[in-house]
Image 1: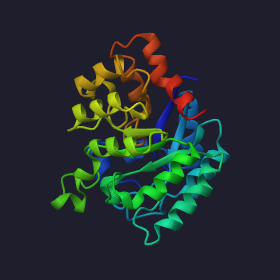
Image 2 (image 1 turned 180 degrees about the vertical axis):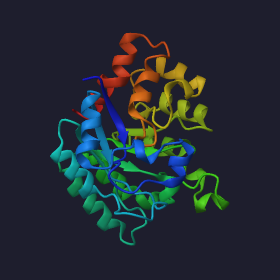
Image 3 (image 1 turned 90 degrees about the vertical axis):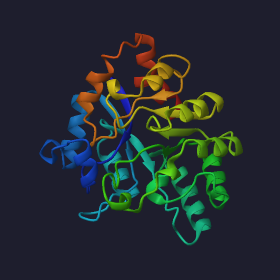
Image 4 (image 1 turned 60 degrees about the vertical axis):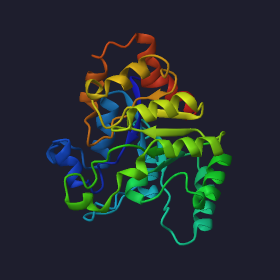
Length: 277
């Protein structure tokens, strides 16, 4: 296996227009059927983890869901290693959300969970969500949180109502302290707070980070140095597909001068260990 991509959105459901514009992605280049989507990853010898979260900014087309990504993962196991399920942090009954999380955590197809604090409008360190975090910690599956800049609402009036502050990495620091047995993944390098993110990942043993949203040569220099050095055991390869192309991401990763042993960890070994694949 060439790599495990821990950050993949299904291209079979509605895509965010602003994200496609930001990454200059031509929709004609993106596989839209389940079989074409799976074949694309199989051809590259890459296994993907599929994210069940649906952006609020995508209004057209069928919404993405946990059921949809689970169906894809079950139907195409050669391409998809499992799913990162989503939970509704805006639900009026958060106790019901915690119970649903418990059900999902028992599903072998669910390898972890994914949240997008800026889009979902919440702080991970907010104690209102601690019953949910307790449930996820007990389920012993990794939990991913978007950090830093988001292309959702980018370059629109008021950012489409999305506030970047919810994605500050420091909020994960508090959470990691209060839930030390939870494996927390910071999605993306955290720009413009990449130094803050590196500090959190370095300080908290239970916090990891993925490389998604960037080609490797575009990663902030301080971030590249960190994953090549002290954070090499805590970094995970991710693309943010379909917004970042898998082939381009793999080619880019090969060009940044990482030692072979480090590349193997980031591309495969760290994810295999963390997600028990």
